[in-house]
Length: 379
Image 1 (tube, rainbow, N blue to C red):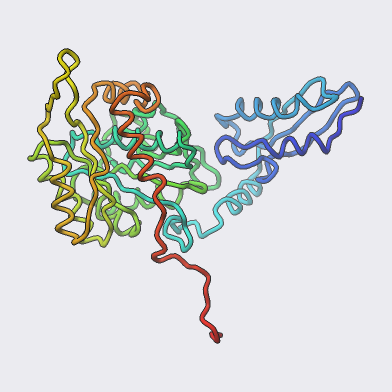
Image 2: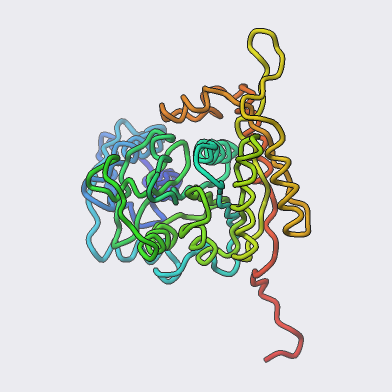
């Protein structure tokens, strides 16, 4: 029985590149399809670069798609490498806009952008950000994560990946972890984790701009930025580069920490951004022995920050949630195993998932969006 090559090509139309997440037939990666008289199908696929780390995944996906077709006795996947012009064409196809523009500021962008901020370090902001990203991805959302803490980048470890991004004609293809596309300064340090980043203000701004404009993010539902603590260069640059980004302030219940957190939220008044809400991390939890509530880091800091920011902006700033203290949240970050997946029923994980649902399903406003409407009689 002969193999229907049209059926093979139809099956390959469902095979998506693991990095770009679009069919290989749509983005010019399918080079050729042949079939022997014995029913062995040979599929030749173009890789973007010679050392593509996803080559095994692509081979597996192609094989799994073709093998079930009637008459197929075997599948042989041959991998070739794109030339310069092919990569240039792919870049043009994927970007769809000027290389120097930030897609999230373009008219009609439906991506919700949240900048996760804190007044000071040590409040668990990065742990919260990483788990929110993974929880949103687990909900079925397309999620991107910018590790904007250039000096103290920790997101790669928390998501258990040190994979480097691929480059296609100057376009950065970010690695993925738990379904989240992420970019971090770590990938651009030849000396690895221990190498310090000696950047001053203008260089920090340029690095953040590159993360937003030179990286191919695809069609995201949500973009999260893990900001460094405080109200310094990156926080200000975020306001300039992503004026529609909403700020989420992370604090602990301790009143002293809350006082500092208010400053991070108040900066949004100067950058003309909106505060989406406040998250209280390390909240009280029941004693494992007697069940009595334990408040290791004080009480009421999150509500206090939300109340003070509401006064500053003259409208309600919600307390999005209180995440109970859980040592497993820290352990999961160290091990690269997010709590929302490793222990989804833990009280802290449930709180994180609820916050992720609130932020991830929140409708985007129409402010600054081009609706394509033209007044009657306009020429």
